[in-house]
Length: 89
Image: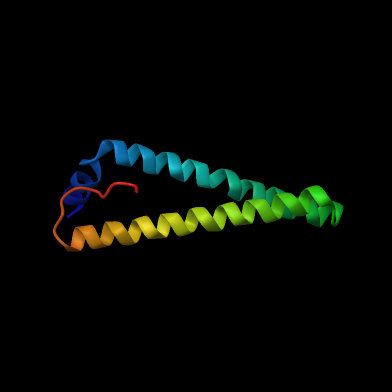
């Protein structure tokens, strides 16, 4: 089963690289959110920290929604018997 899973993921190497890049891009707003929370805790409320917190939280939520949508698309394509990873559209 593990070998089949690896074969399925590597069928579309371009998709794997794009998905990995997306994972790295998700980390940046997450780190910005943590930085904003620490800054708010240490320095109190200031405009920079609040704006950074709001923007980074919105970015994280949007990226997670996109990621969950792709996972649902992946599950649907796999359950219908498709052997290739779905394209990002």
